[in-house]
Image (cartoon, rainbow, N blue to C red):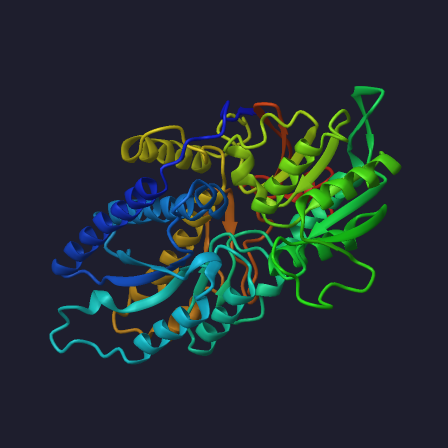
Length: 480
């Protein structure tokens, strides 16, 4: 299924777009307080996000704006439904920045824990809506966010992440992901790379062959990248070689022995050119961040020594925002595949819930901002929407029958199961007793060709009536 991408890189309005989404949340917070004044039980959740973007690069690569939009849209839906449903708990959202790339996540988590632990109900109950009962956010798998989760877990605070995917983020009893784990994402990608004809023959670019070898590009100091690279290496059936790439100064001796390390994008471009020239049936599996991929692609173009042949790159979900913003439209040598979290609007397989979300999202963007939206087919907002939906269901269960429930009781409602619904990304079903993403979570593989994006694989419960066991490769054998 084909979906159009922007013809040229999108012109961004970082502050305007961020403030529009934040303003919508503030409006819904006022509505929630009105519910409280009328006698309803109302509580607060904290959304831990990265800092507001200030540049085009921050806007495209960070993902905080679509994440914030997804949170705003579910809060609006929650408040609308609460008008009639007296058992629903309206929720305020306290948006808190955690520094660039979640640098201050640990400190901010500790500050929240201290606030929650010092909370005492007001004698006249007139500000009980300020009581924090759970956490959303932590969209990126980083050492800083993992440390923050440990702090929240020790305090017994339920946390549902939006689009963090590293398996290494697991291990805390109060933490639940909303996005598929890297083990699932990498297994699907490896199955796809092994079984599908993705490598264009230099003599005839219309004919493709299967990849026999993979160059795995990772940033060994980035939890997300290291995790995704390791899982792909385990699952890919052909020859493979890892290359460590970071534009930061690498820690001495950090990558495994024998791993090539580059900090200069031009040197990396030259190396990849050499590797592909020596073995043309090589696929590049990119797990480093999107901004690093931009640096590589730009250098590859500038060098021009390999641009007469096609280069096939398969990337993780972190590349999605840059691709869908039209950044790579003019890289004719690039055959780019990447992971995403929901089907595009034009795909006939989407569920009614996904279609409804897309319509609401598009209306929201049109009503609150100007210009072309770089995330029209991006799954970040949908994952955030579903994550908040799940957290709000736990609040309904916990506080719907006991408005004096302890905040720590929130963590017992999700593990018992029963949190399932048709969401923006597909069918959401949290299994009982395991701190895992929803069962058989939706994962899409997309092929970027010129100005179009084509869905080449749709795995998991993107609708309630389908699942990976009845789907062909690359979905069937993937975990999750």
